[in-house]
Image (cartoon, rainbow, N blue to C red; front, side, top):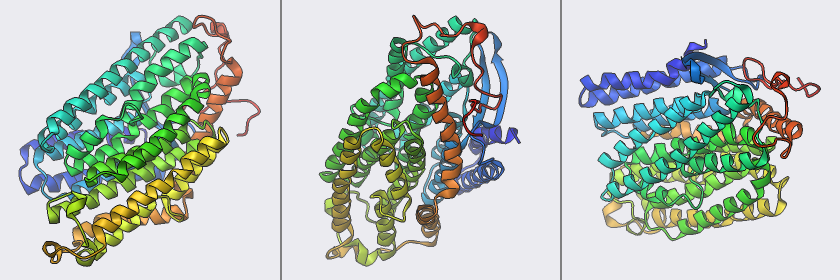
Length: 523
C-alpha cells in the first residue's frame, strides 16, 4: 500500500491537467469529483494506518540525484496523517460550497491541494523545500487574479515575506547538509539521516534561526505577520479559507518535523523566549480583532491569535503540548475554514463584509446564525468542542515549562471571547435592516457543507481518542528523539560542528521505518 501515498500526492495535480479541456459547470463538477476521490484515498490511508506505531508508514523511496543524496522520499506518521486529511476535507468542502468558480481557479485549488500533500509527506529535505516553494504559485495566482481591489499589493507583500523567509531557510538546509557531509563523509538530504547527528550549540543556534524564520513567516508569527491581514482580506473566499485552514499549518508542521528534532538544545533554550512571543501574539491578535470593521480581517487576526496557542504547545517540548498542538492544528483548520465559509455565504446574500453594514441577520437567517454560533463557540474553546481539547492540552503542556506564561496565554481568551461575542451581537442580533428581511436561509448544498464541520467539532470534542491516539504514538516517538539527543549529546559536547562520536561509533537510533530505538524505554 506504499504507493497509495504517492497517488494522494499527485492525483489532484493530474486531475487539474485534465480541466484544461473542460469549461463551465462541467469543470466544477469534475473538480468536486476529483476532490472527493482524493478524500476517499485519504480515508483508505487512514483505515490502513497502524495507530499503535509511532514511526513512518507508507514510505516510498526513489533516488533522484544519488551523488548528493537527493531522493523522492515520502511517508506519513500520526502527525502528518491528520493534516493530510484536513487538506483533503477542506478542499472538497470549498469546491462544493462556492458555486461560481472559474476553471482556472479550480485548477489552482487542486494544484495547491497536491502541493500541500507533498509538504506534509516529504521526508527528503530538498523535496520538502521544492513543495514548500511551489505552494507560492497557486496562492499568488489565486490572490493576484481573483482577489479584491488591493490584490496586487497583497500578492507582492506575501511574495516578499514568503520568498525572503524561504531563501533564509534554504541557506540553513544547505549548511546542515554540509555539516552532515563533514560528519558522515557523504551528502544526504534524508531527514531520518539528519536525525542521527547533533551539532554544537553555536551551529544549532544559527541554523535554528534560519529554519525558524522561514517557518515563522508561513504560520505567521509576530512580527512576521503583517502580510496576513492583507492577504486574507484581499483573497477570494476560497483562497482565504485554504490559506487560513491549510497553508498556515505548513510552518507549524515544519517546526515539529524539522526544528525540534534537529535543534533540540536550541529549541529547549529558547522555548521561554518564544513562549513570550506567543503570549504577545495571542493578546495582540485578540485586541486588534476587537477593533476591526471587516469580517475577513477580523478572522485573519483571530487566526493569528490561535496560531500563537499552537506554537506555544509545540515549544512545550512534551507529549501533552505537542499532541495538543497537532490536535489544535486540525481543530483550527476546521473552525477557521468554517468561519470563512460562513462569511462567504453571508457575502453572497448581502454583498458586503463590513460589520457596520450588517445587523439582525438572525431573523432572516436563523439556521446560518446557529451554525455561526456553534463554530464560534468552538473557536472560543467551549467545553465539549474540539477547540477546548486542543487549547487545554497546549496550555497544560506549556504549564510544565512556565506556569506564568501559560496563565497569561489562558487569560487572554477572555479578550477573544469578548470580541467574538460582540461581533455576533452586531451582525446577527438586534433589529433586522429592511434590505435584509427577505434573505434566504441555508440551502441544501450549504447545509451539506456545514453539517460535517459541526459533526466533527462536537463528536471529536466529546470523544477525541480516534484522533489523539495516532497523534500521541508519533508524538511519543518525537519526544524520545528530542530527549535522546539532548541527553546523549548535550548542548556543549560537539566542537566546531563535529559529531561527538567517531564515524564508526555513531549510534543507530532508528529503524528503516523511522521508529526511534532506545533501550530500556517502553516498547
